[in-house]
Image (tube, rainbow, N blue to C red; front, side, top):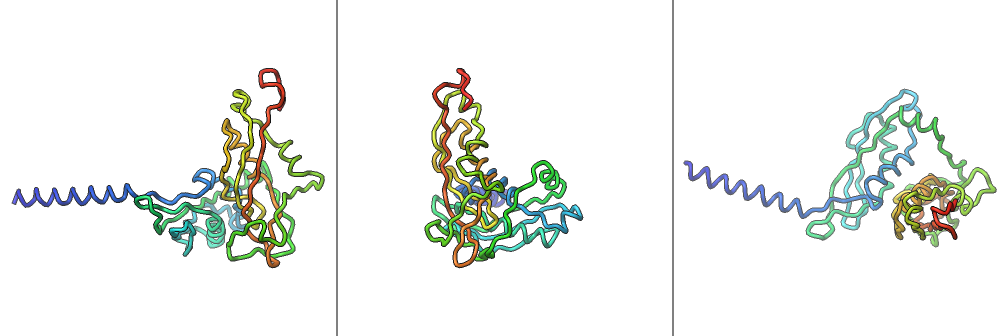
Length: 264
């Protein structure tokens, strides 16, 4: 009896070990912009449903979906939510996210997963009171519902930065709003950060990826500038569409260095 138990225990241990080894070879899917930045982007795009906001409803909405071998998400469904309208908003937000597919032994695989969107009426109202977000004026066209992403060259009208003050230009915005990072000042780091991103039909950037890094805090500052920028969306077939684009932001120290008092 003791021998049989020992054999069973050995086989059970081997099977558990094999399962752990297999699981260790699976790399989970990740947002192309990274988890932390994606969470910030989701918050930046979130529009709290008015009824839920007035009733101070807060909670979590969980969206389940499958990510294919090509990284494209599909078969979305609400797995859990505290409010129907917030569930719809969570679904809209999660559908924006681009993914790196899961891999097994280095090869892309299909993977079923979920994403949780947090709704906090208190935090939302506090954020709006401190810095009320700018919204696009009503557009002439409806938003396309297919979720397809277009290249700028495919469009009838390409996206362009939107400013309430018509005198402001993109160059002027970057010149005025850019805050040179202290670390970059200290080590006299300069160069051009290139960001790739998608302009959504609400005029805000999503899926921001650093395509050319400078370091010293410059990458993060470039991301901040793009996150705070509003665009008029691209137009295709009389519909507002998602557009893939890029933007370069140059960090230049100037003739004098930081310790000489350069104001950048």
